[in-house]
Image 1 (cartoon, helix red, strand yellow):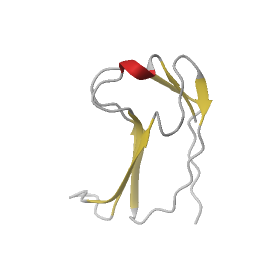
Image 2 (tube, helix red, strand yellow):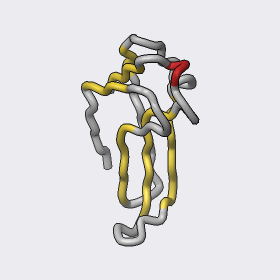
Image 3 (cartoon, helix red, strand yellow):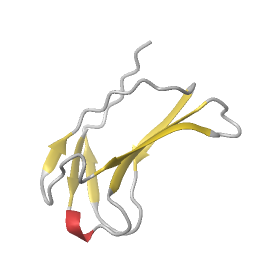
Length: 86
C-alpha cells in the first residue's frame, strides 16, 4: 500500500495509521494478536507518498485490518492490496 500524511507533527495522541488484529472466534472476537503501525517508525514524511509492504504470519483464524487513526489528523491510502498464502 501507499500512505500519505498531511502533517506528521500535527497528529494528536499517537501516530498510528494502520492496524492488524487476529482472533479465533467470530462471535466474541477476543483479540489473539494485534499490530499497530506507527507513522514515525515507518518513516512517513509530511506531504509525501510512502510505499509500505507488510508481511505477517498470523496466529488467529480470522484477520481484521485497515486504516487507523486516534485523535485528529489526515491520512490517505492508495493501492492497498491483500494476498493470503496457505
